[in-house]
Length: 96
Image 1: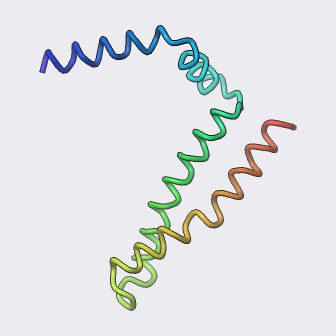
Image 2 (image 1 turned 30 degrees about the horizontal axis):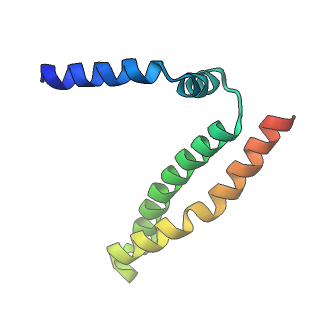
Image 3 (image 1 turned 180 degrees about the vertical axis):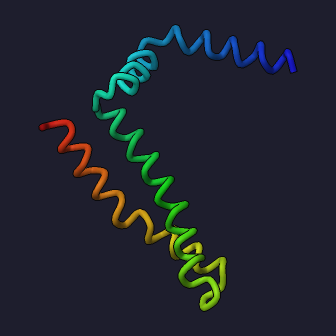
């Protein structure tokens, strides 16, 4: 366990020495929207929408289609409305 903690500590110490990661983390903490933070937030929103779509698909059509198929279809259709909304929202936040 201590070996794992020392490995994680050395990894974090090495990442602090890279200026681009430091800039990225400070942009996330300050709420500034750059191309990297926009891609990061788009990925986070896409992941959450896939999970939410799968849950919604199971909830709505699980008994009719089968739970696996309903989860797959819900996971595919979940991001269909979220991704354009996130892109428009990030553009509005950036330019207004």
